[in-house]
Image (cartoon, rainbow, N blue to C red; front, side):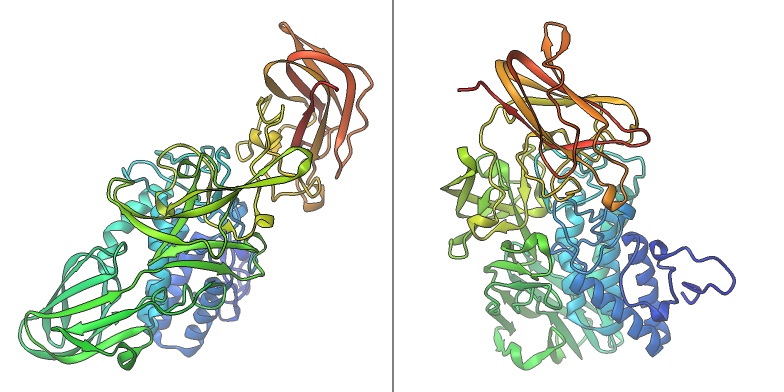
Amino acid sequence: MDQRGDAAHRELYGPYYQDHMPFLQQTEAVGHAVRAGYFYCGAADVAALTGETAYIQTIDRIWENAATRRMYLTGGIGSRREGEAFGDDFELPNATAYCETCAAIANALWNHRMFLLHGDAKYLDVFERTVYNGFLPGVSLEGDTFFYPNPLEFNGVAPFNHGSPRRSPWFGCSCCPTNIVRFIPSLPGCAYAVEGTRVYAGLYLASDATVPVGGQTVRIVQETEYPWEGAVRMTVTPEREGEFELALRIPGWARGVPSPGDLYTYLDPAPAAVTLSVNGEAVAVADVMDRGFAVLRRTWKPGDTVALDLAMPVRRVLCHEAVENNRGRVALERGPVVYCAEGVDNGGRALHLCLPDDAPLAAERRPDLLGGVAVLTGRARAVTRVEGGDTEETEQDFTAIPYYAWAHRDQTEMAVWLARTPDAVTPAPRPTLASKSRPSASHCWRGDTLTALNDQAEPKDSGDQSVPRMTWWDRRGTVEWVQYDLPEETEISGCAVYWFDDERSGGGCRVPASWRVLRRDGEKWVEVEKGKYGKPKRDAWCKAAFTPVKTDALRIEARLKKDASGGILEWTLDGPKP
């Protein structure tokens, strides 16, 4: 640990390896999120074992930065695909979130060690959030397919999972499946902890455990349907009567605090109703709280029972205004579980939904769905584009499922963060000739998507990476094409294309050297009309108007610049002229 950032006798490896400066000078979570999480685990262990103030202060600083500025609502960490790395403060995009499954495991292990260092429930709150929502989506309900990244938004087609839009049975670098196999058996060891004569009950799960405390072994049996219900019953059976403390975590979500800091807050932060009793005798929870735990100190006898009841209201979560992608949006939680809207439950789409703050929501147990879950139901507004660029709104039934269980049915859109007002919605595309056509290309980079061509996502400029794109990367200096197969033979009078060019951000794509439009004529491709295409330009629509032609397929052929690739953000078609 002390060798990190020490350049006295070697070359430093930089932020990717958390090797950019001496550990005691570090203040931010940086670099490869998995490497970072494991390194911070070790640092927390060293801090705990040595008790050195400087180590403790440093790992506290880094944790504060990660938990309150760089962590997703799901507990996922690592927002950047490039380098599988932490981004800057508040850099938490949804559709391109990397949130590697291994990074969620590392974050959970790190927070467990921070709890062992400090004894504060806030670390177990993050641990629990990460396990249910950051880690669990990484493995299918069947246990045989996996997510490497875990985005919080999906357009229904993007091959985000290392070339696939679904969970995969294996990867070229298959760290995530094997890490899942290693992590799951370790979870029982995180349920309880002991310090002196205090037993910490940190996790609620149906279980039978033996815990050494006060010179004897204590058996604790939990009966609960957590996380779907908040009732927890514990039977405490020491080998003999004895005095010790049983500290029960009152989760942050029950106390009205979704996570440490102000990165996430509840729209209604009122604490949930919490009741606690021992052998049927009520305990005033507020009087026995210590760092997020309700501490019961008594002489325990074999067969003593503890009843903890945590109300589970549906919570609306707001995000810090500095997170650009989540402004004007809301997420849903119930208990420790984060929810998402999936198109399969909401009329085929999800990104066009608006959930007003006053729309009632109810929880419903569905033992027949996705292995048995609680869903959230209500009414939402659907926003769709219409002619002339306007939108129209309709009301429809709304269903949200636990985020961890998404992508098990039809391949449809998914969103964790939903618009609160119609102006924050990504409207459903209006039916157009382009949206009805099937796109294809001579080549499409595995991290891009052909649906970018006709998704009606208006780019801000040619370097806009907040909208989907189609690129021919990493082909350079070649002649490439994109194609629309029309639903039927149709008269076409023109088209417009918005080129992708990321030169300003240091990328390798440029507007092409030249382009032309071809139509399919039987088995041949024929140029529609020579000289009708202006010079390719950046940050603007490039339009081609030509004498109307009838065809069942249209192509754009682009000659890429020497030593540069290229791509397209949007391609529209003009039908018959009136």
